[in-house]
Structure formats: C-alpha cells, structure tokens
Image 1: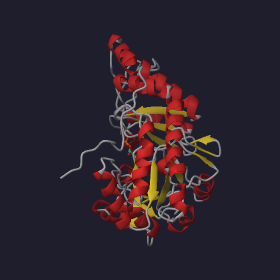
Image 2: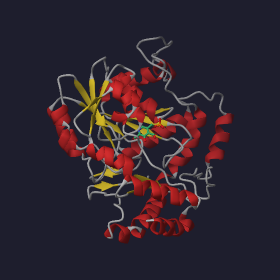
Image 3: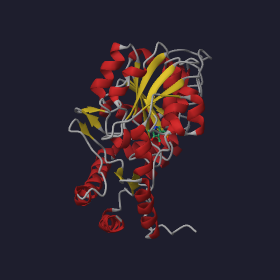
Image 4: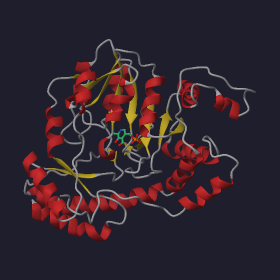
Length: 378
Ligand SMILES: Cc1ncc(COP(=O)(O)O)c(C=O)c1O
C-alpha cells in the first residue's frame, strides 16, 4: 500500500499575475501562437539570457527535436551525450535516425565527462549535447574546445538550467542551439512548455519554418510576403497564446523565484554538511565557475541498499523523496538505438545511489523537519 504524502516532491508555484495575463489573451482576436505574449516571452529570453534569438516551443523535447531537424541529422549520424539524462535528449536525434553515443559523467557534477569525449569521436560524429544536470553547468570551455577542434555542433540541453550561469554567462547562450524547458517540474513553468535558443544567425529562418509546419507563415505574419506555402520539412512546434501568457507572468518573476529556490537549496546543503563529514552521504558539488539555479537538491548514498532504505523511511513519514534517471544505455530503447563508450561506472553508481529531496517554494517551514527525518533515517 502507498504511504500518504504530506510533503510532495514538487509543487506548482503561482506568481499571482498568471490569471490577469490569461484573461488578457481572451480579449485578443486569436489564441494562436506567435501573438503578443509569445513575442513578449521571446524578447524577455533574448534580453535576459543574452541569446541571439529565441523561439518558444510546446516543450523542451520539441526544442531538442527542432535542433535535430536544424542540424539535418541523417541516419547513422552520431551524437555524443551522457547516458544519465532524460529520454528526450536522445529521442530527439533517434527520431531522425541519429545514433546516441553514451559517455560517462563526472563524479562531482554528474555532467558529461569532458575528458571522455574525444576518444569516442568518429567521422560520423555531428554534435555534442551538454546536459546541465540539476542546473549546474558542464565544463563548457573544454567542451567548446572539442567541438571547435573537431568541427562539431554544440547543443545545450538546458532544460534544468534556466537562469544558471557558467563563468558569468547564461546557460543557453553558449551552444549553437539550446533547449529550455518550462515543464511543470521546472523552476519556471507554464505546465508544458519550452524554448529553442538560437545562437547562430544561420539557423533563425529555418527554425521559424520548422516550427510553423514547414511553411514560411512567420514571414507572412510579419507582412514580408503576401501568402505563405510549404517550403521545407517541419512540424507543429508553436505554443498557443494561453501557454505564452502564463509563461510571461512567470518569466517576469523568474529572478525572484531563482533566489527563493537557492535559499531552500542552501538550507539543505548546510543542514547535511555534518552528515557528509561523517561519510553518510555525498552532497552536490557546484564548481566555483558555476552559478546554479537551485533546481534540484540531491544526495548520493554509499550504497543502493542505503538509498532505498532512506527513500522508504522518508515515504513512511509522508515525505516524497525520489530517485532519478534510469541510464539510457541500459534501457531497452537505449540498447537498441545507441552506442555505449566503455563502462559507464559513474553513471551506474549514481543512478542506483542518488535520491532527490522535495524542493518547492512554500516548503520553507518544513525543511527542518525533512532534514531531521533524513538524518534520523541515515
Ligand atoms: C535534461 C532534460 N532534457 C529534456 C527534458 C524535456 O523537457 P520537456 O519535459 O519540457 O519536454 C527534460 C525534462 O524533464 C530534462 O530534464
């Protein structure tokens, strides 16, 4: 039987202006995408993330799929990525016939191990996907060097990294293309949503076409042409004004939300310092080059058994603590579709020993209790 949950793992956070913006959309003549709120969100992203151009999408997954289309991924093309990531990182490329090449992660940040990338590059390699786990940046200088030297594209999967920085630069502004997610579990959300950030001018026009079902409708909407038609391969990757209005309310408060989450993250981090000293667990590592966004607080236990015992003990108290990714290289589809570079030892250990603790705005008063229960259970 399931234990009843008093403290869920995640919870919606409303900033209060969502309803006002949603109401405003109802006075507009149309709710289709690329309207007033869609444009407002995109201007906000361009300005605040320092990216060349942004296009809202229905999800982070859709933004990754658009990236694969923009890079013209063909059957057999290889894309280097961590195995310790969400399925969409790989799926987006597999949909085009691409082959994910799974590389191990670093034991500190749990991000793609940049020292293991060059050995897996082949003449079929087209791109590297840097997934910024828990909003902490990959070692971008090194990864950029590798992409430049080998003439590869760099995609940032910044789904968890909204308003995180690397050496002062916003994540999402460093790759050729980057995917953001505004899914309900993310810091800034509109239920389901995302954005493609484009940092190379050459992709902008085709990205608009891909988003608009392969047509040049965006140019038509801007009054640049008098009728639109099918000009390229594309799909339906445009969110409606309803999603954009909700998202705009959240974007306007997003720096405040990030600071609130960072405070909660720091409470966990401070509260578990002693337990780490006693070698009961390992806390997240944030290199001095990274300014993260408080997206997730996780701990790594010394063994899978201890991890499972902790989750069970917390669940019994009504605290929802959860595991994370099943490594893609060991999943049924990953085995069929991908190629694995050697033993992914860190990935295997982390996936079996990591637990994520509840973190959402409003949990402030209960964090002490969660911490007490974690320490008791250890
Ligand atoms: C690393 C990563 N990539 C991609 C995605 C997909 O984003 P979305 O759920 O918006 O499609 C997620 C979402 O959980 C994610 O965590």
